[in-house]
Image (cartoon, rainbow over all chains, first blue to last red; front, side):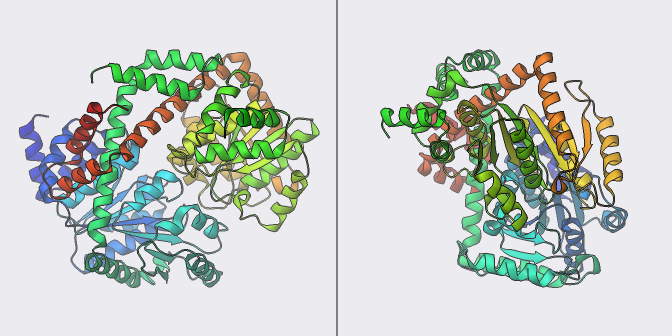
Length: 318
Length: 318
């Protein structure tokens, strides 16, 4: 694409044209060269949207909750975008029938944009792609951007941690509620939802969680709310939306919004710089092969090989 | 520690002293400076152990299966080490009573070493630490090194992919068996275990999995076996062990073992090189802060900031 076409695409996306927005997200996924121009055009106009991470293990009802939240926020007249960066998400193709029906309802709404995102060509993977995708949706005038992640695993926790507000979902009786909570989720949640609260054990899951949370002080000093919900019945959804909104009010008033966003941008810069260095590395396949052979033969260790590799880089112009 | 002490520690670990081995794994976790000397000393003597990844979502019974496999391999006289890099693993502290009892049995066996591993100081996180931990256990004379990972999330999938043989565990009726399978697990498994096979739905889970696997050709051309097991009753465990052993025989005969190990070492070199670059970045906090502020102000985009950062690095000697 030449610059004129990119400008046209950005312009159509700014006028809420769904196909143009989808095309931009594809550019993010692919790590396409056009992306640089897109982000340059968007740079002055980001920072309006509330970026909300929805995270939790497979099966806790993330997509049902997300769907219910879309409905709730549409009632209030907000434009809502969903970025599902969870490869196990029903949004990514594995939807059960009920979910599909709910999603179809939103699909007809021009002020809702739902998209699952992979990282086909992105160097730095989804950790680099997700914030860029959110930035694109922010710049194209969505008020709320929901980022759905599976929340188990380092990079997923990282993605969730990059949102303005992170909602952690748990479910009772899955045998992994507390285990999942241990997997780094206690550090990242701004608010917690015990979904499927009509099931046995919801209260004890909430109690366990409250005890676990009590053992660690939130870094920003704000008490973390726990909400019981049954998103498939629509119960507790208004409460979740209210808690999300209250968190934004608090973030703004306390100055934490600016801090979080600056931290997010710093991490994105680091990711992109590392990705650029990694692509340099891939271009030196012969050197890497020789170093690997030396390690296999037991002549050098991996640290010495890494030093050698960086030494080679230092001698070569980009 | 001075070199003399490190040599002494390595020597004691080579004589199977559990405390010395544990100390070495701690050095790996911490990314301690001593680690370089340790890995240099070990470099000529690695490559004996069979490195086996055990991966699956929380609740599928990874630790029960691992425990049953330890018992099985001890019967055959092998020295077995377990590295649990799953933060939600019972090995990491959340064991239910039954698991603890089983583990205590192994704890008294001097030829079994079980250790959960975090990455406290490791740059590059567990993706860098796990292969180093496995290398240490390999070099200290274990015949089998089991690496347990949660297997959901990019870095976990990456760790599992670095084993010689990767066993993927699923369980019926968890509502997420197929979803988890989608989360990259279909690409990494060398053999699949449907655990808790006494439960309803085991056969249909196996059938679904077989259909999913049939849609993708394994990159190495070997058919992927599916085993039904109930590890808590000891059912199917011998079959799993036999399949693991058969896979090693195949790997060796086909030349794939050497290929996989070379690829693993290449990735480790890359990880270490990137980690070294990242630590360089952390040392330039002021530059990063200034670049972040420029992005927040909408003056530049994150790509331009990353370029600028690399430009700054290029001007500075390490």
